[in-house]
Amino acid sequence: MERSKAQPYHHGQLREALLTSGRALLEEKGIRGFTLRECARRAGVSHAAPAYHFASIDDLLAELAARGFDELAAAMTAEADRSADKGAEDASTGRLMGQGVGYMAFAAGNPALFQLMFSREANRLDAPALAAAAEKVRALHAAAIEAVIPHASGEIKQRMADFAGASVHGFISLLLEGQIGGRDSSRALKARGLALLSAMAETVVRAGG
Image 1: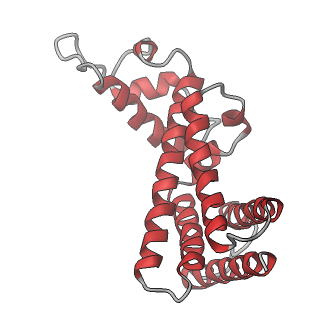
Image 2: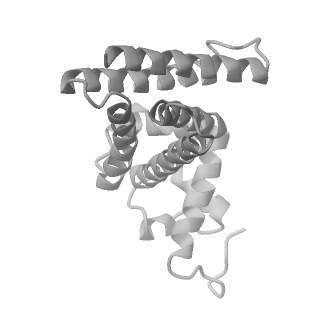
Image 3: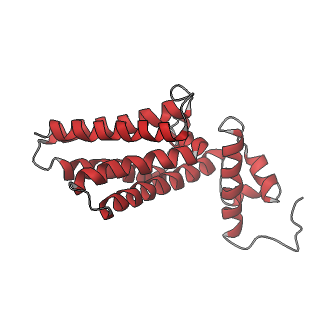
């Protein structure tokens, strides 16, 4: 039911309401089933109302993706800090693995949003806020590699940052797409993920000499 003119959203509330309904719609229907009209309907406003805050569907998707990257960076940092708090013998390696755990956990908890963030649709969006948010995640990967192999050359550090990011992203993407782990229990999947992270960190250490 649409809100009456006597009960309009206050400034800022409509934007957040559209983002909330948009995220729920994205998780339910995916990118292909995402429309501004349906976001508006779920927010309880007219189909023309989103234009006050989002000129197009791309603007709304860009904002959702940007917030997703912010949440991903926060999840990576939280797990890295948690790993450091455990008093690992090698704190830098522990943080690298912790970031991977946070990355996978975010993706598993927000599969449709995660897909949007790394989709062709998101890549073609001209949105500075989205680009900046995505760069935060890349910077976390780079900083973690720098901490593990500080004396390696710049070329090796870049190569290992690419390797670490691709390893984590590739594993969780294959898992979400049902290409691996279809018959594994949740415990077995977690063990496989941790084994991959351990192997990734070991490779980074070896590459750094």
